[in-house]
Image (tube, rainbow, N blue to C red; front, side, top):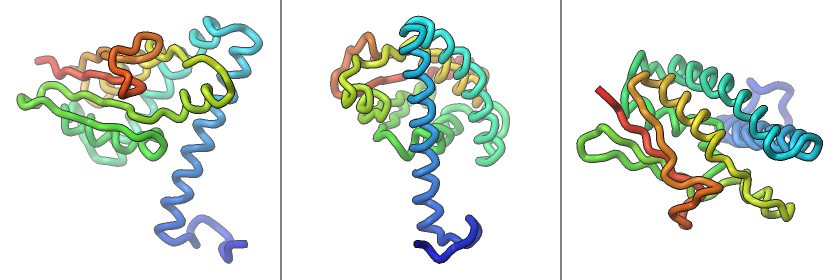
Length: 174
């Protein structure tokens, strides 16, 4: 048993570990919620409800990161790159970020995905997350900078690059 009584008593390393636990718990709750809706109402309804949930949550998450990271309004590629690195997902999935030479386009590639891995372990098909992701990533990026346009390059159910679970492209428009 740890010799601590509250979060303030934890060391830096313990706080980092606890943050990862919190992120896993959040994602597990999201998955349990989704599977419950999917089992009762079917995939189509579960995706519809999930999309509306993400429509609200992703903006809240982005706004809180803007404030915490002191990104300011319309922080462009630099702000989006930083914000993506601090999302709850960032400690759970292995990802890559590349920025074009002209600094107008950012590609976000997810190499490992806990959501899809968990579904596969349960013998379930991949979650067709493209439609939800367009809302989630699109609104996240637009909250960081209103000039962003978001497109899915590869994402279930349409995988164009099997080396990644999904690939998202964010283009900064003038």
